[in-house]
Length: 374
Image 1: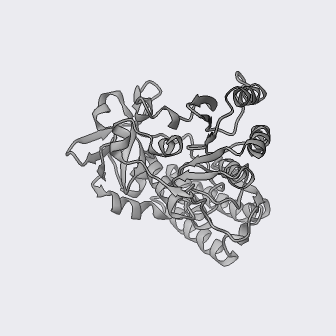
Image 2 (image 1 turned 90 degrees about the vertical axis):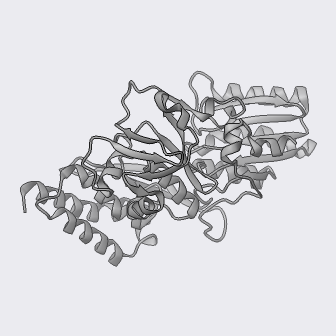
Image 3 (image 1 turned 90 degrees about the horizontal axis):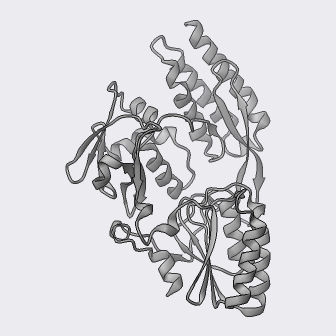
């Protein structure tokens, strides 16, 4: 065993001792015997003269994939990506962000990656991705399709590019995305602007409806939430809307309590005027986004429309970090658990299920929002 490998094994042992102590309730998610088995499995992979240190964060992820807490993981956010970003759309995976040079491939079904069909690739990565429900699985597969290191590791790729093959026969040899890489997205299509993650929040009056977009549970320092809340109050007073639409789509969390001031203003109006209330979600709604969905559904009486969220109302969260001493790999872990309802359904299901098709996206249609406005 080389010294490098010994240091990595020391890191695995450090993880084994530290994670149960710091995590809110690790053994509610994985038995101690399973945890031992998984750490031993990773030690066996690392204890090999051919093992490469660059692959260490990926094999460590196998442990967290078994734990299945979406807030606990190896921090690989800075790892390189390809210029493509994919989403699951009606049973297929297609790019919604591409480089400027490959703009024609937007929303074209992906057929294979490095010679593996999407079904084969999904099976290869399954033990490295973290999910506890089918919606989260679709989301993690989507993200993995642009994960440079993971793709190369599971497909044993030695090339300096990743090969994507699309349903129209187009083959692309993609290199890593650079800061200078110019990209384009379907979300700049007219009609799809309500699916963007930024700006974090805004409001519009649309006919007899007040539309509130809230895509990030974080305050914009240039547009304080107190100002946003005042504008909501003023819009309600001026227009007395018969419908209120709160759009959480693509909201992957932050500080859930920031929405309380908005909810208070809305509840006061709803209790008095009884407007129809809608809450829009999709599978990118996660963490604090699900807590805010709970508030709008159960406290404001909203009809939830869209696709299931990738997390349930009850969940672990409030992430903290620690660093492995030798590799300096950063580990994220949950320090809290929120329980709001009996049972443990791992997803929030919409009252009205609507999933846009590729044709909807191409034509700039937003059937989820349109359902509420109609």
